[in-house]
Image (cartoon, rainbow, N blue to C red; front, side, top):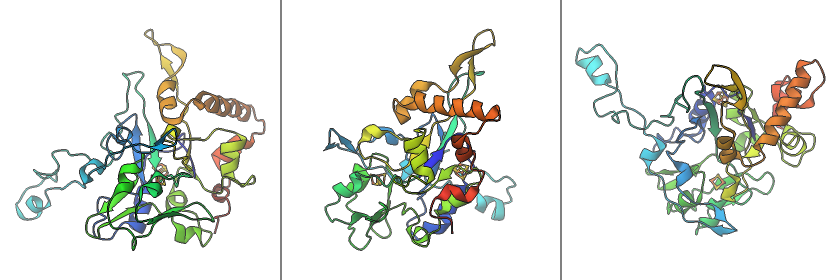
Amino acid sequence: MVMDLNKCIGCQTCTVACKTLWTRREGMEHMLWNTVNTQPGTGTPHHFEQMGGGFKDGKAQPGIRPTVEDFGKAWEFNHEEVFNGGKNDISLAADGGKYGKGPNWDEDQGDGQFPNSHYFYMPRICNHCTHPACLEACPRKAISKREEDGIVLIDEDRCKGYRFCQEACPYKKIYYNEQEGVSQKCIFCFPRIDEGVTTACSRQCPGRVRFVGYLDDPEGPIWKLVHKWKVALPLHSEYGTEPNVFYVPPLSPPKIDDEGNPTEEPRIPTEYLEYLFGDRVKEALETVRIEREKSKRGEESELMDLLIARKWLDMFGPFQN
Ligand code: SF4
Ligand code: SF4
């Protein structure tokens, strides 16, 4: 999957599409296999970037297991007081988490001081990594990667709930179902993929943010964005798992100087984008900028046509049913 961060509006339609389709069983209440976070921010689970896991120089790194609270419990509201206690205002219940951590608690806070305040949205799913730390950590061999398309799946019959996978995944994209005693995660909508239908998150996205296809298909959108145009980059590739979800980094308006004039610097600091997506960020942003200018001048640009997604279904490669 490639996600174009220039187009995400943070509407959470993808989150809801996934939630209603896959995580409605008991014990799954806290699970959002798809999350969309305001960046810069702490992410979901909170501070996942500091929780370890993954590989360094090929060696597995220790990681910690996120708690349900880290993922953000659903808030509780004072419905009882309103329906039966004569109170008029719906608000968080007294123990409603004390403004506890919701799944996107940093919503729209971002960083920087006016007029240089900034933020963008970053959706995340399991990256269906080429070298999945979760798979390697499982002593039950309950996690596998499908030969035909690389989707990483947990066999819930084999899983005994040891949760080593949760510790090992550096993206913290595995949830634990306390009711069923098993680990669960994004399945890349494989029953849909098997029918030639793209994932629910990509199909429902009103921003046309998400491209789906095979990384080795030169006719498809993923190969073109990742390999041909080199504008889509993996998140935290230093974690060593070779993620298969890629991001087109966000362009931003110019930083304003003390006199109120626009500068050459982008408002979203390049260093922050490099922290997320590595040292090819500048090159990727420059390519998008150059092609955007071409397009403005009325010249042809395959990249702009792709990113704008004029033909919506073309975003989904072979999964257009
Ligand atoms: Fe496993 Fe985490 Fe990679 Fe998903 S993102 S395949 S859970 S290591
Ligand atoms: Fe909305 Fe699409 Fe962004 Fe999800 S990826 S929050 S559906 S715009």
